[in-house]
Amino acid sequence: MEAEKKPVSNKEVAKKAILVGCNNYPNPKENLSGCHNDVYNMHNTLIKRFRFDPKRIVVMVDKPGSKQMPTAANIKKQLKKMIEDADEGDRLFFYFSGHGMPICHNGEIKQAIVPSDDNLITCMDFRYYVNRLPKKATFTIMADSCCSGGLIDQEPVQVGQPYIVQPPKDQTCVGENKPKMIPYESYMANLSARTGLNDPDIGAHLFQLFGSEASIMFRLPPDQHPKPLKIDQGILLSGSEPSEDTIDDPADKNGPAGGAFTKTVVAILKGHPAPITNKKLVNKARGILGNRKKYPQHPCLYCSSKNADAVFLRKASHGLAEIGESSEDRVLED
Image (cartoon, rainbow, N blue to C red; front, top):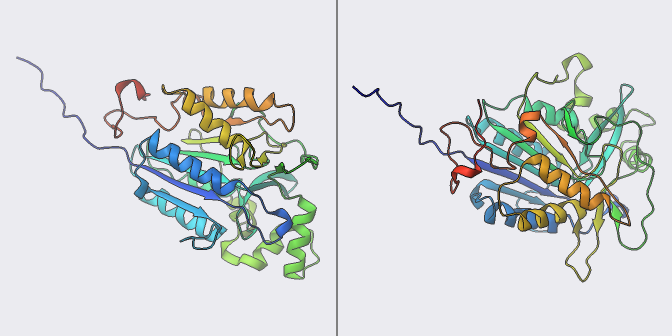
């Protein structure tokens, strides 16, 4: 008598994405030129290469007519919704192109991205979201911004530096190439002008300006900050080391303006039609960008060792099939 076969789950993995591009900032001197192009580039890649449903991709760019401006409050609202709506095994993707910066907090240097309203979203905010993922769901973050290494607080490093030693030196770029970092002194001066406070504590300024929408790094006492889990499903692909600039390249004969990291990743994916692991993708980008004669940068990977060897945006669990997925695309979990 044959053993009874166990039913196979027909549940399809949901793939959802939030794509953010910030070209325009309160201080016009900090404006960038290629971040919207980066978002459109990633949008096309998600649909054509990874078969994301366009209806499940939220696009946020700071230009007239945008449905949602990429303020910190709007970005975090979408992140919260994506995490809360996620089911077991879902694939979640957050992409950011814009300024990043290191910040000193309680004697430590931490990382943050800078939305269009200058209200920082910090590594502790991303740690908070990663800690709330449902079982076997993964949350991949790709950050094309300066000092983005370490953007998930205390996530293990697989490629690159584990932590930031000191802030990057201001880099003077010749021509239209521009580092995607707001210098700390300039950022603090802008905040002081808006708040009227004479206080070296960045959190005091941000809390006065944004209240409950400020980062949990500044709203909560240290003993209430989210702590890293023993094992989590956060995956960070950063455009640079924690103490390094990323570059916003100008338009030229090779194409429109855009982030060097984003353009490199998209080019690698186009030239590598087979599934590629997170680690291999980052190492390829690191090899290309690290050898640039001008403005080299070194992408990093932060995640568990298991997720380092998982296929970029294609990791699937037992019984959970992705739309359009072939058997060779799967990386099965124990």
